[in-house]
Length: 330
Image (cartoon, rainbow, N blue to C red; front, side):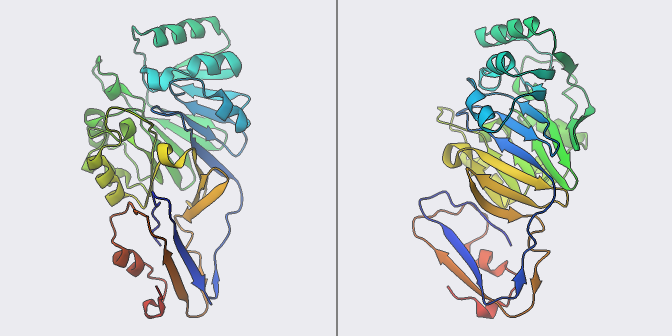
């Protein structure tokens, strides 16, 4: 079943009535990938089943309130994908408040006061071990974090030197890409280092130069999360949104949905959590269903919804291939 987030005041409600359908509940340990709502910026928290935490970027300003609400009291790894203020602005506050074991950046410096403040803060933290961003695998408990190669030529283009990370937990995978644009995304595609993933953080906040068709085809995400806030750049761009909704089953935005958490399980299944609400379960959640009797699918579309998905309403209904379509009531 394909599910799309409805960006609206209404809801799309789907019920399976009169069915002998058993949906296996997620069991066992999981990784949590949380896209913090930091406005027009990035901050992504990775939490392993063993309770080890990593933070990738920290938005314009301090994300400490959100981190504490998620019970973060130590960071195994802190990554600055590139030295723009909307990604590193909150890192100094994090370092001053929470113990950090390892820190990684792309080696680029910047002349901004935000970067200089961060550099000064890092110099005072002698307990933090610096890691250079180069192809390597990092273990966060049972979660693997792969560091992708940077563009080989040093550049003043900070976006296209963003650190790319692939987070893996069994069959579940998430791609975090900073503000990568066409040049870096094409480089990764050419290097054949873009895997199929469950979740993609939209590069560069959904800008019109933050995707290529080849990159989206290679990564083939089921969920795309856009970290974005009020801005004058036009993020997310309409062309990017069209590409995302054509590619992924679910597209979410922090400016509309708030904090987004993807709970990933080793068998590839996942849950989308918005606040305390479990929005949906995907990837294999229906493959484990056992249909013992004919079903009636009741679909209620509450007016005011704008489903962001490449399928029309009729096509979406017909994609319920597990069920007897003649029994659908709308």
